[in-house]
Amino acid sequence: MDSSQYQRLRAITPTTELGTEFDEYLWGALYEYAEGDTPAPDQIDQITHAWATSPEGYGSTDIALLARLTDGRWATCVAWSDTTGFGCREGVDWRINDTRGLAISQGLDKEARAHLGLALHGEESAS
Image 1 (cartoon, rainbow, N blue to C red):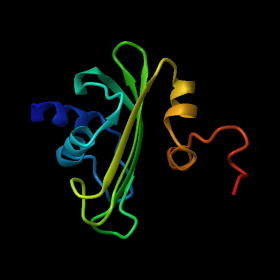
Image 2 (image 1 turned 135 degrees about the vertical axis):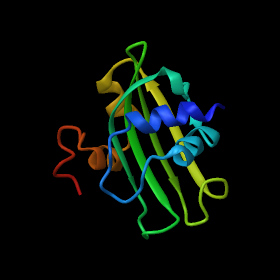
Image 3 (image 1 turned 90 degrees about the horizontal axis):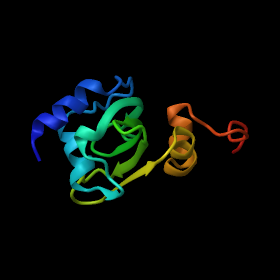
Image 4 (image 1 turned 30 degrees about the vertical axis):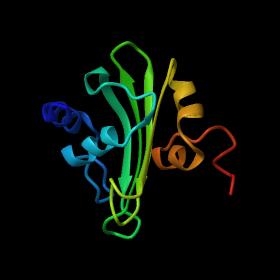
């Protein structure tokens, strides 16, 4: 795939303050190891929420994002890799839903919603 697509995605991704940048490598991994209904990079119009961190401070990565597509639908991605990185042990789950609400409730797990500040009613107090 054309790396300029990843450059465009990098440019429209909100900056995270968690030490893991959504660079071209990370975007490439989210597509190369994708599972689920994956939108083409040029279908992503806006990334409204993005979160990425390395729990150990090196190597491993946890990711969650919510994006609006050019056709009005919404895409989510929840991904992880262990300290061996993408290509060895990872999971990348993309989902596309018709509405933002469905994307949040069905495309993101509870942990991803919490990290993105999109918890469902009642999840805020859940343990």
